[in-house]
Length: 147
Image (cartoon, rainbow, N blue to C red; front, side):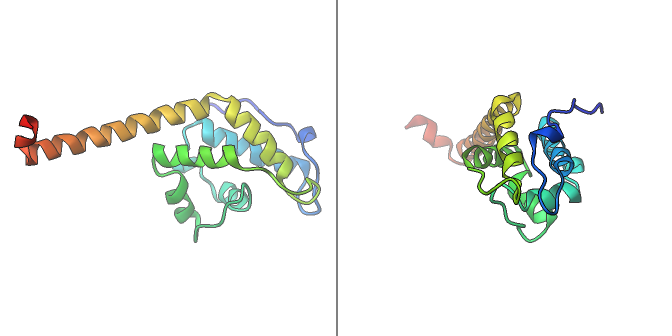
C-alpha cells in the first residue's frame, strides 16, 4: 500500500517542552493516513493510540483495544469519531499542548473526502442492518403485511 503524501509539515506547529514540531507532524500525518485508509486496525499502532488518547478530549478507554472498540470497530463508530472531532474545540497554548495539531487536523478532516465517505458508509451500514431486521420481523410476523 502506497503512503499518502505528507499533508502536514513541522513548520505548521509549535514545539512544546516534551514534544517537537516534528513529533506533532508525524502524529498528524499518521492520523490522517489512518483516516484516509478507512481506519484499519493494522494502522492503529501503539504510538498512534498513545497520542490519540491524549488529544481531542479523549480518554484511554481502558486500553488500546477498548479505544479501538469505542471509536473504530465499524463504519458507524468511525462516523461518530469524526463527529466528535468536528465538534472538538482545541484548547490551550500550543507551546504546552497539541492544540495546534488538533486544529490543523480538524480543519483537514472536515475538508477531506474522509468525512463524507464515512457518513455515507455509516448510513449504508445502518440501512443494511435495519433491512435485515425488517426481513426477520416480517418472516416472524407474516400477518403484519396485511395490516
